[in-house]
Image 1 (cartoon, rainbow, N blue to C red):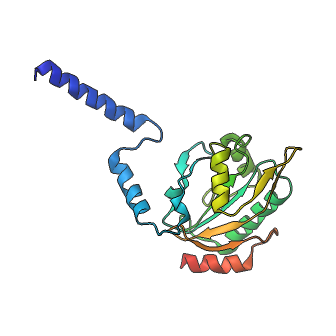
Image 2: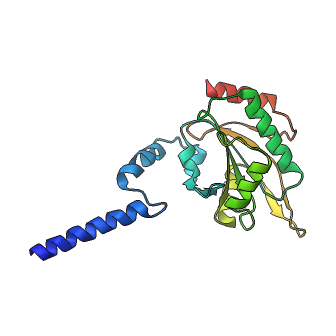
Image 3: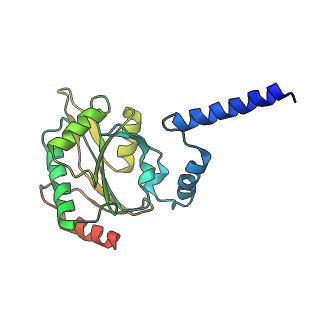
Length: 206
């Protein structure tokens, strides 16, 4: 092999490595390995069996399975909802306020039911308007309707778009353990914390 050819191949490899490092969503194998190892060890009934790429209010793209490893409260809503969703947010805020968990021990993931309308910018505005604690709350949206419906299906949330632009939906907050298994769920819609769910979360945090 000529010296010029060797130099050419070395340059090509370096450029490819740079592209992989700089391209959003593309991780070097060494970084992917721990995540893949975690997925391989998940139990069969883990909801993290569903791959779900999301974008949060900060514009960060992530797979919700990256949230494995600690308890998670997960639910769905939409930005223009004027009735159930604000109450749902108040209930979750009261839940966090009563628990007072340490940062990093529990997260609340709220996924939009309206990917055609909700954007990272609108989710950030909503989070600011409701004064959601960023240490715990993460608002996110899927790329399209198909992914949104897949997420709703595993969370047992039913919804349909109405002619007036609103979305009819049930509310359900699901508590997952570190492995993505369902520990508990709540369909109570009040601006206060569900005491039964609070008890389950406390146990999960022990």
